[in-house]
Length: 189
Ligand code: AMP
Image (cartoon, rainbow, N blue to C red; front, side, top):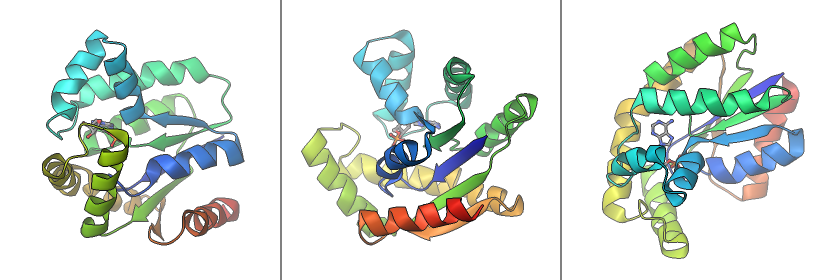
């Protein structure tokens, strides 16, 4: 079983590359952000709860994210592997996730971090907001999301480095070049 975490700040390209990885390696793509947005569109109770945090650029509380993730994963018992996009985002999420994976005997194979500097991230996200209408892609909320990333999510780099799972990839350049670099790391494993 191949379980990949695609890690990086908002705007690093996690979504774009996850979709390609899903096609290339036959993995199930789990994006917690996409799941929350679908719940919001469907006006579910979970969507309403998540929206209150997402609109402010804050993280949805760990227990909500974890409950949602575990129930989604239960739907894919026969998957040959997963690509996790936007999860985990806190140390608590990473620890609970690890416990859950241990029980299911499906360890994390690799964590790939896409490195992009803040000014480039802001430029990309403002552009995405204009094109897609995503309500959390406005400059004020983007800056808040980057603050939250630096405080709550970035410590995971150290967490996964210590576990010898982390590989960093330069996230600037053409999408094809970055994707090829990701594939090289995966194929090397
Ligand atoms: P994303 O599409 O990954 O950029 O996520 C959009 C928003 O959804 C984030 O700014 C958070 O509010 C929320 N979100 C997505 N994934 C998580 C997660 N793993 N933990 C907490 N909040 C999340």
